[in-house]
Amino acid sequence: MAQKRSMILFVTVVLVLVSALPGWAAEKGREEVEVVVPPQGLTELDLEKEFCVYWGYPGAPVEVIVAGSGLRLTALKISYDQRNQLLTAEKAVRLETGKMVVTGETLVLTSELVRLPEGGEITTIEPERLRMVVKGPFSYHLEEETFQGEGGFTLWGSEWVMEGERFDGSLREEQVTAMGSPVIRWENGMMVGEAGTVITYDLASGQATAEGPTKTRFYQNRGVHSSGD
Image (cartoon, rainbow, N blue to C red; front, side, top):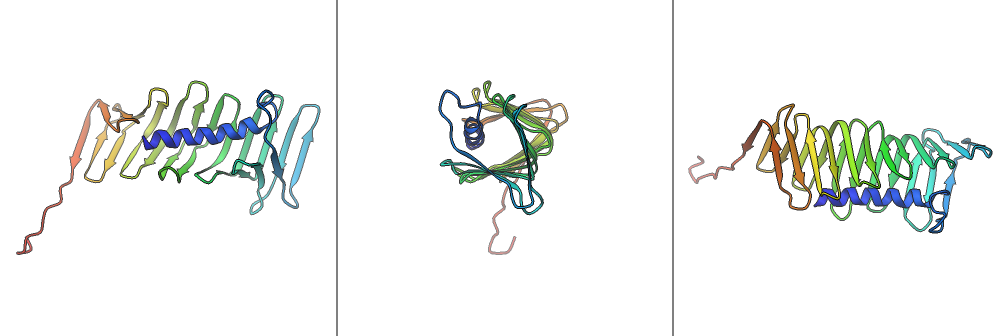
């Protein structure tokens, strides 16, 4: 359940950002978006092609602020293709609100898809603290509410850790599937799968099922007697 809420929070933040940009909000009204380029930064505008590029530099990134949302996006380079409804943030990317932080080298937003093509880190602060690191490409399809990642991932919950080489999932079906030597660890044990093992985790119930070979270890704390044994 906590993982599901963290994914919903991430998608909600992204929707706030993309709906605030010109071209995405023609029918619903537009939020005010401010792009701040630091001193000695660079702005390139192609009015004919409706393409904008903003450059910052280390220690002074470009900043995008959506008024009234508490949302802030920073990166050393931000490109916006209004005609194709495509925003790309590159180098030292940081997307933050009061409830979560997303970091990575590249963040790509369209009206249909959210991508971290080089992987990244997502940390939620509210309602529960969770941290997910994806080493390879990560994508989320807005309409289908499905997501996938590869290259290795680790998800830290409050009482458990899940990791593997690849994963995919669906918010509608409320599940995430880990593949490629998947592992689930908890306080008193762990379950380890082999390369062909598939572990499916139910976000609503917190139950996991595994298809393929696994090894499960349980840890028991032995009491200490007065004799010291």
